[in-house]
Image (cartoon, rainbow, N blue to C red; front, side, top):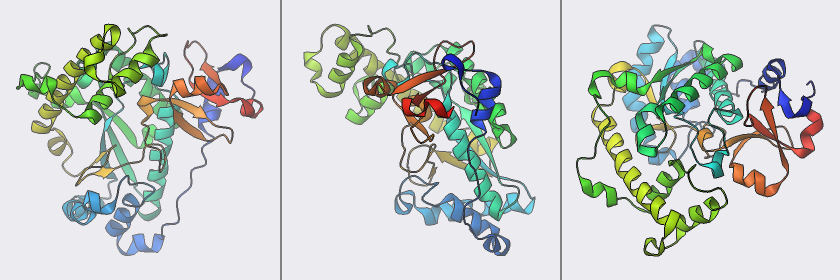
Length: 350
């Protein structure tokens, strides 16, 4: 690979970087695909490399029973297996997680490479492979977390450019969840019960804190305030911590309203009646996917892309990289935030 001059990537070098993924079909028996392609496809989708969580927790038998006819209908028409996935909303506006980045980066590319590997694995047993419909939910949930909608649209546009740069646009397409909801959503959902503002457990509080816009907190104060809100008694909060605590509680209520609304008016069964509706976290009856690779739960929009010392792509928090001091930022020409970070030991590899 050509050298990266002064820590920047030109377009040619970027495309060369994106082409380095060594994707190849897994050892799934092609003969099995010929005998019973539906069974073979489920075997791929439910493999531990693809599936997050246990078979028992997702009720794998029930999952197969509910989706068998849908899958068979697609195969009868020689159409790709359709998967929908709600996600890729925006880079979370938390400097501890993503630094100053608002665009997708190599972390999102890692997810696309994982989906590309799944495509190849399915094609091993069924030639048409898969079609992944990504439902961008950024514009839908932006208000709940204090993110400008403009930022979500910029994220989506950049993500579509990455689809083209990686070649994933052959089997991945994007749909805006707000557009799909259409006339169902006439305004931002509002909580029916004001008590929801004070509801929720510790895990929900921490999840909301991780999504909330924290750019207004002074950089030198953010680590301490962030740590305080995750572990201390709310009665002790003052200053920025007290303000942020109230914002988190309000955000929890707004997001709960969005979530409730989406469950009531979920457009996916109507828009994609034969699809398997995948998720990024385990839940009964759904296929939860590893988006980077097995055992790596950090979602791409919650972190930054990293090339480790072996040249493998990881997703890490920006604050961790800064603390370790062993990673160097690499920029795309014309951008002011890193597209990825590489381990200093790998400086000569690019």
